Length: 162
Length: 383
Image (cartoon, rainbow over all chains, first blue to last red; front, side, top):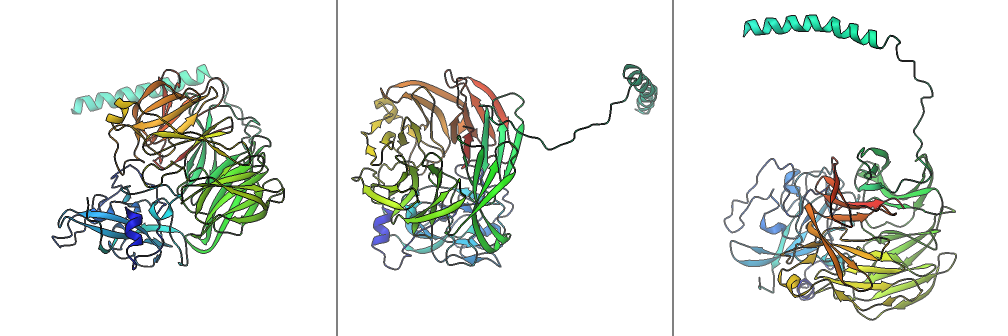
C-alpha cells in the first residue's frame, strides 16, 4: 500500500528512510526513561508526543526528539535534520483519517536511548529500504550519527482504508 | 529500645576480638604477595558454550553462557551498528565499526579492526573508503566469502554497493555496485548473492582480485508486498533457510556460483494458520548439526508484530519439513541462536536475559541476566 501511495504523490520525498540506533527496550511501547509529557493542545491531534503510543509514531523505530529538547516536528538544538526520510502511513484516531508521516532523523547529537520506541506497522525488510525502519537515514547532513526522529505530517493519504 | 540497643553494642564489642582471634589462629600465616600479575589470555579454541553478545552501539561482549558461572570472558569496542565475524581457519576476529573524530561530530571513519583470538589485542585495521550501512545489526551486512579470505561489507549511501576486503592481506580490493539490492550472502566458492527490491536474487561471482567476474539474476520469488523473506537466515550444508513473514521457509542453495531457489514450504498446518502463528523477532531462525531448523514463532500475529518477541520455538526437520517439537519459552524472546557441538544449547535473548535451553527437550538450563541487553541484538555463538 505504501508503495502505491508514494508512487501517486509527487511531492513526497523519493527515498525513504529510517532511524536506527538507540537501544530500544521493547517491542511496542517501551517508553524508556520517559519523564515528561507534551500535548499539541489540539483536539484533532491527540496524545502525548513523548509517548510511543502517540498516533504519528505508528512506524517509528528510534528515539523521540520530543524527549531531547526538540518537538514532534523539529530537531533538538544543535542537531541537523536529514532531508531524506522514511515514510509511514498512520491513522489519526481523532478525525479518523490516514496521514502520510515523514520520519526525519536528527543527526549529530547525543543519543542515549531516552524515549526509545519501536512500532512496525507497514515495516518491511531492508531489502525494500523505503519501507524499512532499521536504517539510520542521516544523509546530506554533516554527521551521520543518529540521535532522534521527528514525525511530520506530509498530507492526507490517498488511500483512506484502515 | 534503648536496652536492646545497648545489648547489641555490647555483643558486637565482645564478638569482634573473638572473631579476630579465631581468624588469626586458624590462619597464622598471611597471604603471600601475588606474583605473575598479567593480562588474561584466552584459549586458542574457545569452548563451545561461549557466545558473542553484540550491543551494537556500545560493545561486543564475550560471555560464557554454557556454564553456571556465566562469566564475561572479554569485551571488544563497538560504537555504531557494530558487526563481528570470527574466523575458523586462523586465530582472528573482525569487528566492523564506524566512529566520528569528535564523538558524534567530525570526520567519519568506517573500519574493520582485526583482533587476535587469544589476546584480544587489536593487531590490525582496515579503513574502508565507502560509507557502510548504518543499520541495526543483521546478517548480510558483514560476511565472509572465499573460505574466509574475503570480507563483504554492505554499503548504503543510500545507493547500495558491497566493498570486498582481503582480510588476510588487510586491504580493500573493490567496490561492487548492486543497484536496487541489499545485503550480501556468501555464494559459491568466491562470490555473494544479494536480495533485490524487485523480488529477485542477484548473484555475483568474484575473481581472486575481488573484482566482479559474472552476474546472474534469479526470477522473482520474494513477495515483498505480501510475504517477504526475513533477512535473517540459517544454513545447513550450503542451503540457506529464510523464514517469511507469513510463515513459510524459503530455502536457497547457495553452494554454487548460480544459486538455486528451492521450493518454499509452509511451517503451518490449518490449526496454526487459524491461530495466526507466524515467525517473529529479530534473529528468528537457527540450525543445529542434525539437520534441524529452529524458528521463533508468535501466536495471534498481525501487521506490525513481526519484530515482537515470540513465545515458542518450533523445530523442523529440514529435509522432511515436518515439525518435530514445539518448545515453549519461559518468557518471550526476540533473538535465538545455537551453540555448536554435541552439547549444543539454544540461546534466547528475552528482554535483559539470555535464557539457555536444551534444544532437545526445551528445558530451561539457566537464565543469565545481563544489564543493557535488549531486542535488536545479535547473539553469535563462537565457531
